[in-house]
Length: 501
Image (cartoon, rainbow, N blue to C red):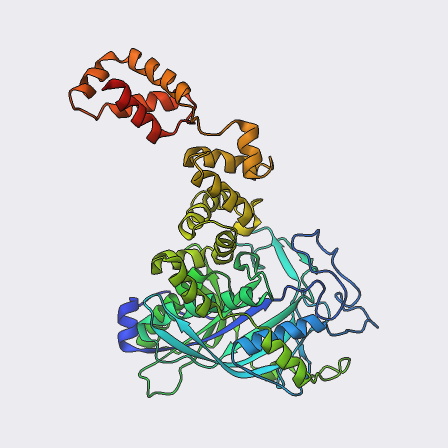
């Protein structure tokens, strides 16, 4: 473990004196029903060590069988990243010991990945496009999960004991490895964030993963190195492991650039190592000296035959690929009339599909955005769930807005109706009827409430007759209170002016 200085060079100074080069490895958990090499179910949040088979646990005599759907998903990812799909590829054993790897090796791909030599264009917030070259995308299985109990950091050091859950062991992964990404300069952190976000959007669009970073479905290993100038050889890199949010990816790159610049300024060497990212302050700390490929003693997996995807199958998959997320976003931006900032917020919230489905169900784009990015986003944040996990559908939202458009409820009453839908009371119209939320549109009932309000505040009528319309609001407010917010405020205003004049 290294003991390098904690001093930092201000980021702007660091990128003036040094040229940063990125490399990013992204792991995506595939959304298959079963694991990569056995029939154990893929279930999030199950009781520890209940989603396992002898293959998951690496028991003697248990033989793996390749999950065809996982192979299809890997090909879909490779094609979406403009990769070449290998005519022949095979699995290998990556040998290392760690308690969450029950076989003492990970079944992965080494020198023969299923996809290689691709690229993806990454659009930054101001519209600049950066092309990122993809070296490879290969299949492998996930490890289990260690939980270190005791101590203050949740890490092995200082823990009293450790627990291992093998439910995740064997879940299919695709790892996407970039070639070095040069020439980003001061925008390196932004490029790293945008690249991971672009991949997340692609995974969701392809339907190969839920791609929920907070659950670890997508994890990024961020490599950073510095060199004196773009003409210099690549510097020594560090690899910050398992970064699982866009903001954290950006912060990790900024920190490593500042930290490595301080090391180089002091005349020291940057140590090639893995590093841990700390959410609390955006810093990184040493992990272990980075292993080279030969340290893993790769050799072909003897229990699995090589894969030779049929060209016809690959072309069938290619033909089924959806519209690329960036193209779709630009199309919807034009159709919906959102600003660039509004669209970016929608994308970051994972609401594109929800809003699109709501528009298809009959709501105007602006109204669909209002509900999903307003009341529903607040509810999702409060419940700490994703928008799509809320017990409300795009059809519900479109029906709710239709009730507003028809004048049967106003926005305030609509929010009450939405609360009922979220509470499981039925569809919006059912909730409106059951709760008696419809707008009071009977002029007789409204005039009765208006007369009562005017009688309680007789001076207001005189002010209105004198041309001062400001006090009309007080009467409207009194009527709204009397009708529990169910009056049509516009109609009340009209009736007040008719009554007084």
